[in-house]
Image 1 (cartoon, one colour):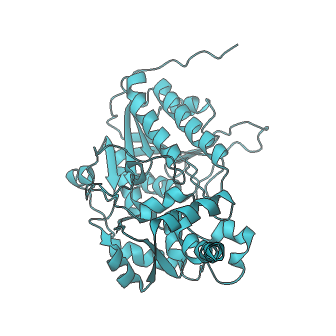
Image 2 (spheres, rainbow, N blue to C red; image 1 turned 30 degrees about the vertical axis):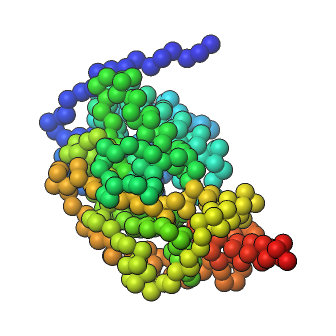
Image 3 (tube, rainbow, N blue to C red; image 1 turned 120 degrees about the vertical axis):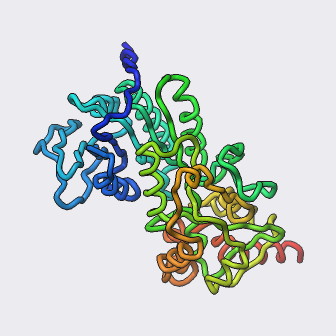
Length: 390
């Protein structure tokens, strides 16, 4: 027998005493940073931290003691933060959002898995089902606003993209790059949710290349001794520091900005500027060689990055960030400063030296498909082609 559909309550007006904000994925990464920030933010009365594990916050704890398997412990408010451990795919989340006389006003959903090493099918199931559940639960609990976070990658990296792209630009990405298929599905859910649940506002934040304790195909691009440049391409590099993303998410949670919102440093860097600032030399390859080798190495399991990731190092996908700017927000970090931090973070992570050339290590540390192609795959493929011609 199927479970009954949840009762959808009308969204409430903003409380005069301050907002109650729930953050999913609050135990680590951007979620943890945002949870701490909101706990001290003016206009926020209470923060609900939701995750499968407790965050390591000093002075903040959840009560409930030992729990039966599968049970969800109740939280105790400490320093404005109340913890609840649960899987965001569990419909029980609606009860947590409804609360006991103090329901949630805004949900910031950050429990999204974009781990390069995760099983793609399991990762997609978690990301899509989790977002569906959070949106449905929020509507059932009468939550006024849900804030989602995807990436500016959803615009797609194409040679005819405008520079910069407006936030209303068509989403032309495909599912060929790491995690982008999941992000596009989250975008579709965000678009449909207000129609399915009238009164529910959905805001989507789209950061550029995220830097600051992150590990993505695009940050791994800089782990190679040389930067792959595909012949005939003209990439532009635009970054977003996690601190700027957190401050932008706070703007969205406090309802200072809404709709589809790009988050990035002002402007961009040309490939030549990146090479000059980093001191890294380029390795230029024909597109057929680079893309073909990337596809083959990924198919063989030698690199976690599919060939689709290369497009984001070949073509522009720079965004304007106009909506945040109109709301009074400005990034604290410049592209030059974020690149410098990224280079500091990846220092010592060489994708060619030592044991990282082994099959097991290649699957976890070789970096983006482009770096692997340039420094590992291409030489072998060229040698093979020469033998065949002979």
